[in-house]
Length: 135
Image (cartoon, rainbow, N blue to C red; front, side, top):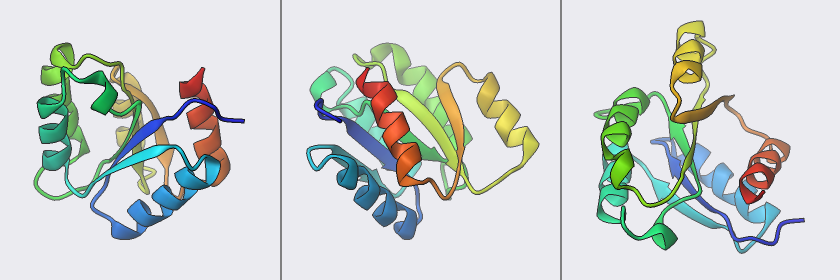
């Protein structure tokens, strides 16, 4: 099904979500690359340092809302400031276990966020996302 190698960045402070996501994405296609960041600060630093190297950047970024120090919303502010410097289009998906209508509405209003996904995310949903990115 999947030919193109897709790079997915997972920005989430939850080790379990990181582990499950890594296994799910690799089960879809073992050649997929997964970048893992336990904090928004580390992810922003990586994007900033690699902004001019599109081959190093993710195609998809899964962003948790609730993280210490730099949460998902603060990450998006930093990302928006960096966006013009980044030499690749990155599809950002906000991920959360929150069904808070305000979070969902805020994510849908942000033109830099592709969609809002509720945890847990199924392998089928990952397949759907990666197929969209591939095409």
